[in-house]
Image (cartoon, rainbow, N blue to C red; front, side, top):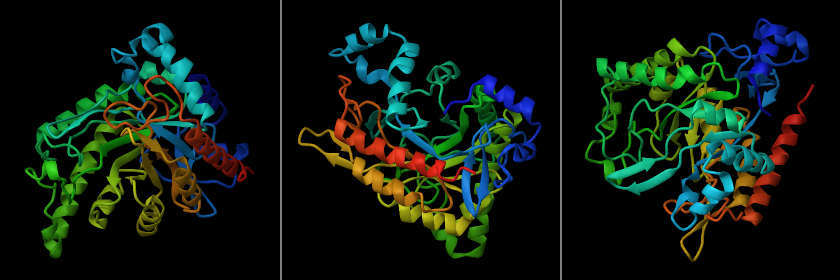
Length: 389
């Protein structure tokens, strides 16, 4: 399913508001109040029989099935660069339209979850590839999510000091990010919404970033004054980022941080985020089913499995994506009334850093695992269709 600008215009002409769409064949979906001030013709949220759904620009239920980490640099190594030059004419447009889009659809995915891929993961040089541009998303022509680089307190980041959310500089930077990223994407009906930080270090650190510590000292949570301090800190962060987006884009959902589900996270943070984000998003490579169930139960908010997978390590060090585990996980997530989708930690190509992918660097597919993933996605698609009125 894709939504062109023509589709959006036709939808807007046929209905002047979300409420009006209820009379056009979707009378049983209760549209939710979101941070969007103008959601008509764009992805939004709704509920039916106490189940959360994404609602597409056409007013229909949408369960996002995404693949993460889609970057062409893997077919530009010296040994295989002819695939890029001769196969795609050194053209991002051809690669996206001739390879990525048809493959994702054939594999049963309906969303680009997050395009950036890990390029180097050294302690003092951990980098992801760049974001796709508006034109590249347009060439892909399918729903997608986009990450906004408001700050660098990801759990894998070890080079940058934690930001001061109350500073003028942080507000200025967030406004710049929104001008750079949100303005070009603000009228695109294929954009589902915006992610923020990839596994923020609110209360935890990893080995390589112990020097800067977490954003907040968890020992302070033993007192009520400490809990209040964390609420003030988190509220400031989520308010500044929210306000920057809404100055330039009133249409799209805010998917917020991709929390690490296996790290400490408290309701002080969630409650502070609640007025400023629409979805709670999680990375989870261990137990996404139980963790997302727990966070939906606690928060009553929609939840998204935004990144995760189980790998099968091979003798040569490469990692196969366990399609059977993905299938079981996706099936179980559908039983969570708060879950609005699942994004697989792909990647599209198996590069030489993470060494996980559905295609190798010669573009040969992992047929067995792709088939398992495709079948799981098709079952999920049929499940969504079974709710049609």
